[in-house]
Length: 256
Length: 267
Length: 90
Ligand code: SF4
Ligand code: SF4
Image (cartoon, rainbow over all chains, first blue to last red; front, side, top):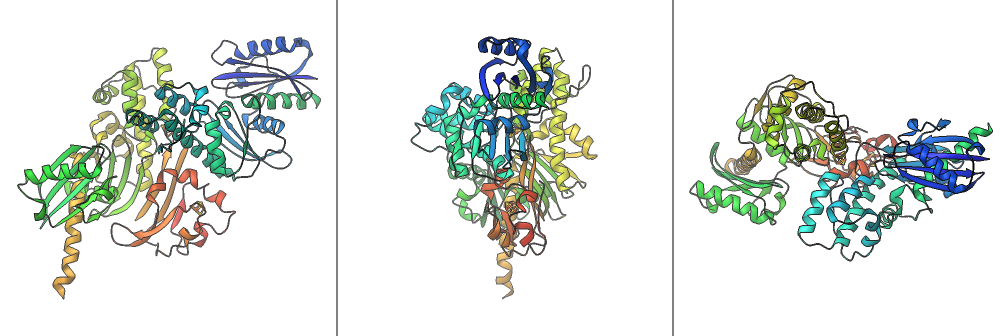
């Protein structure tokens, strides 16, 4: 059985085509693209070599889930993240999704049901927006921030968690000619601290998995591991966790 | 009895000399990289204006974020307590004080002696501080001091800004601009948003007349008017807002000295 | 005095309130808090009372999970405070 999950995020729309429990293809488009969901579905189907008629159910999630006209139903980000996170890391008990404009921490019980969660989409600190802004100030592309920060040799403290205040702190560090990698390291500590607060709120349970686009940033993950005091697992293609979850839920729904 | 108060803030350093209850002189300098040096510079100016030398000052209290590093202070007191004392000096009837600078916002309720009864401070989030207005002024390319007056001259009606976070509000404002909303109407929405943030902090400490506003926000009529409406009280605006904390520190210095002398005299 | 330590940001309000009129400075809160948020020291009016450490006021929402969520880990700061001086806004 073929199903599709569409995760219409604030920045990118991710699509996953699933057959049973095998991911056949993925696609990703800017959410500002017209009919991003529809185009993403077409693209993913094309690369999977599958006709539209074989698709049983399409579940949309993400902030723009109600605008995906092709979807047969919708599901919340929390449910999809939990499902997708557990699929990518079956023993996961704590799932953190660090996205472009929001972040979530979900605690699952042993059966994989959502036991507790915290969501932040109201404060830009602890989201991709934070890294985006700091990257701009430092003139370092977001994709390179993580690896560059690992070269840091000196600890620099960015005390502010707020994007606006942290920006000024970073600018003054630049003026003081502090090395970029050291500033980046401080930036990653700041965002990780904010995220750690969310983990702390649901209560830390070991077996932490990080998903969402920012999970690709090794600097953030390293600080999270340090603060949580446990390993943080990052699956391959972490940004597709929500879409995978949506596709799995689509499979459940078409069976019942 | 000659005492002094030194307030080392994030932007400026202030020093005040007090002779019993009389304000003798004050000094104000921008904060440099070295807080101790900043404190000394401000103190030197105050001393010079008052024709005094440091050894004539019987007691010095420091306050502000750099208060622990002032070498010539005998005691340090938090900004909150100093601010309440200082506001009480300028407005003896003050019971509710709102102080907002670029970096933080403080709501304080005090008694008739300027002793703090309840306080809350927010220095973590730019959206709750004057900083948010600076960001918007920059975004809209409008001088900071025009925001207040223009926000009161509505074109079609206030444009609501729903995001609290300054960063998310920026995108919201840009979207409004693109849709052709009049700038004044957007400014009205921004001032209203800041006023309601500030009001939240005031409500936490409780509101009682008289109401005093100090700090940079006092200069923004758009925010002041809206805060007054919410609070239901007219605000006394402190026109030497910069030195309120330092005056409070100097009063703390005097009170500490009096306390120290009293048991000695009784013995 | 009611001292509110903490902050409000876009995501909500995070204030820990200590009523220094009833706090007797026993220091039990400082002893039990898993995040070591409290300390006991003389305040500006020379009263020895509990307060949130100055360095941590901007992180209370990160370091403290909120009273309801902390409560499972008995004893917590409210439970050990005999005079009920501490309250949380979240
Ligand atoms: S702390 Fe900064 S990033 Fe968070 S809501 Fe406030 S302004 Fe936005
Ligand atoms: S609720 Fe728990 S973590 Fe929070 S301050 Fe009290 S003891 Fe500390």
